[in-house]
Image (cartoon, rainbow, N blue to C red; front, top):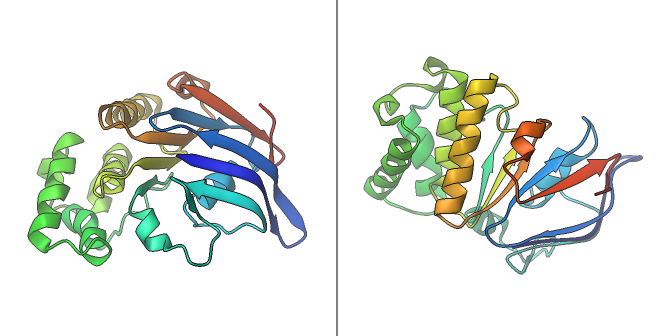
Length: 216
């Protein structure tokens, strides 16, 4: 599903990724770990074009991310993203957070988008919170909403950038179990960044990055 071939990236004179190569199979759960500042988040964000890169090639389901003819918005509809800081729209209800992109990007009707959004909210146990705003929910609840939002397009791949970094250990376990169960049930590929060794035990495989290089 993902092939990263000899990818390097610079911020000015600083090289953040150094000739990185790896691949992820369909349905795999892969954890990327390493010290802070090692390039983990940058690497995962290059996979769906949130970060560009200067050298190498990345293929997602055989589509070249770096090809100027690649329709990145269309590609991202098949790559869900869960962020550490939730990145929900605070001025929109939970319902609207789940329907907005469906209508704008996937061109679903409001009724279709609402039906799909409510299905996902039910799956993460938050359907009763649909008409609240993100600041009215706990951190764990907001992250569950963020996971639901990442899944509304039925993506083949889910990328999770430190999805439990702001949560306590018990809430972290709940969120991670949800991610793992969801990816397994729907045969999704899950790539997740974490510092937590316990979380890494959930993975089929671990990729370790140090100083911008994949070392293991």
